[in-house]
Amino acid sequence: QVQLLESGGGLVQPGGSLRLSCAPSGRTSITRVMAWFRQAPGKEREFVASLRAGNRQYADSVKGRFTISGDNTKNTVYLQMNNLRPEDTAVYYCAAGYHLRQPELVDTDRYDYWGQGTRVTVSS
View: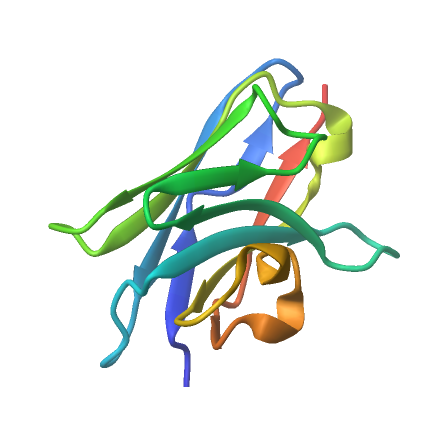
C-alpha cells in the first residue's frame, strides 16, 4: 500500500518554480526525518533535501534554490523549487524515516517509507 503520496509535479519553463507536497496515507504520519530524492531517466536515485529535528540538508546541486519544510498541523512536507533548470528534470520521491544519523540522511536504504513519485519536467 502507498504510505506517502507526492503531488505538485508538472511541466515548467527554465527559471520557473514548483512546490511539491508529501502527505502520508493510511496510518502513516510525518516522522522525525523527512526527505526528498529524485531519479532522472537512466540515472540512480539521488538525494535532494532532508529535514531532521529542524535542521535542513541539501544536495549541492539544489542548494540556494530548493527549500524543504514541514507543517505538522497539516501533516505535510513540502519542497519549494525555485529557479528550476533542465537538469532538475526527474521523478521526485518523498521519503520518511525514524532513526537516521546525520551521515545516513543521503542513503536511500535507511528510509522506512516512500511515495510513488511525482514527475517534474523543466523545458522551454
